[in-house]
Image 1 (cartoon, rainbow, N blue to C red):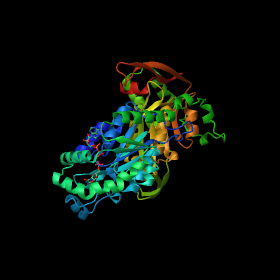
Image 2 (image 1 turned 45 degrees about the horizontal axis):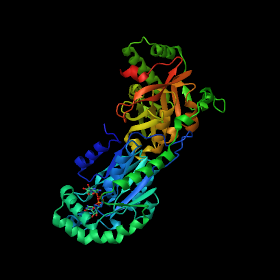
Image 3 (image 1 turned 30 degrees about the vertical axis):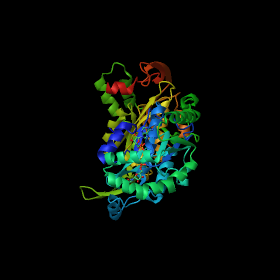
Image 4 (image 1 turned 90 degrees about the vertical axis):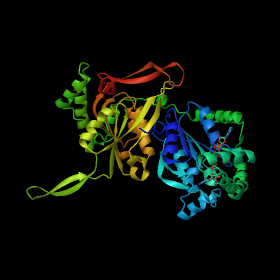
Length: 512
Ligand SMILES: Nc1ncnc2c1ncn2[C@@H]1O[C@H](COP(=O)(O)OP(=O)(O)O)[C@@H](O)[C@H]1O
Ligand SMILES: Nc1ccn([C@@H]2O[C@H](COP(=O)(O)O)[C@@H](O)[C@H]2O)c(=O)n1
């Protein structure tokens, strides 16, 4: 399963499948909330631009910064090389003969580079091109990126374009001796980019060196910091300290600030008409109460639990289906009669489970929409701060691509809404991708009356919520948990349980 945040896996992906330079690198220990109680993003990603001559050590500096930051929110390294323009056959032939100027600013699609960077900075997703140095060509594949709290853009021209410069919070220039740069470039291009030594030297003298003097070196004046191209450990440590202090200033305390109120307020819509409320509770028929009685019973076998969860999930999804738009469809019956009926009127529809408790709702969704695509989000509680962390994003294509996302309808699945911290993060993630708020239907078994539902509804009033029961209590406890980062360290983490009466941990009871 591809994981957006697996830097090494992604590097392998690029180098093995596409035979390109490592255009983009991602690294993460989970992304804390980037939005406030009103659901709106509070801060942009922190963007660093690193320029310098070819083989001066830009990528090295970027990677050392990531390494030195250690346990930080998601960092993405974006290379300017990804944005080389698509070449014609003629240009590619010239490139193979070392007669194409890759070092002129016009060789790079600066507008696309700036657009992608602006999207990522504003917490939106982007799809960046993948470039092959061996083929001298942009490949047909692209790479989906989302969720970086820190972005490092590196390349010879990253400080050249004013639109790009405006996006940086920190500008770095790597200053390196020309001889060292040439020696490094020969070694790298022969080893990694499939070039001959004669070709490298020819290209260097014809294009690389003049362009460095004319276009690259002059941009050093825009830099906030000049970093040496070798022996730069101290400079990198200073930069990291600055980034850490900037990130601390931006840190949000979402869970600490969230104020819980009773769910009764939300069920009573302003007009007094329950239909106007964004929360729909299934009709409490004896049949439904029977299902809940089985599920709440601690003596229920796992087999029965799964059976009744699947049944309940189907009922909830059927209710959710009522919220979708339908259009008229005329059919001819087997008795040769024209009959006017209805069919779904949606372009794209998909499911997204909040792992892993959303999983038990998936079967219900698949029973109702047999060919539906289901993505997932993994949100976990930070062992130190109690804040939610976005650890993994795997969304269907109709959400990953913005032009499709605006027309997509999404069933967001989670077993319960207690503090609403995961629901908040999941909805914000969908909105960042361009999904419309009134196209999101949150389907859940249980809502805690005194949990975060009220804040969730105030922040996202157009998201419809379908649930089967509302329980009285929410019990929050601190439990001891192993810290993945510290060696052998234990710390406390906050866990919330719906009680009175509650159903226990639905995911555990379903899967274990
Ligand atoms: N500070 C450094 N110390 C040792 N080797 C370095 C240093 N900076 C770069 N290098 C080496 O030089 C080569 C080119 O560096 P790289 O960061 O890829 O250059 P650029 O991204 O500027 O083209 C790589 O093999 C890299 O390991
Ligand atoms: N097809 C290409 C495209 C670019 N180059 C050279 O790459 C250099 C920039 O990359 P760095 O990692 O060195 O910053 C640039 O100087 C181009 O000449 C190439 O050789 N072939």
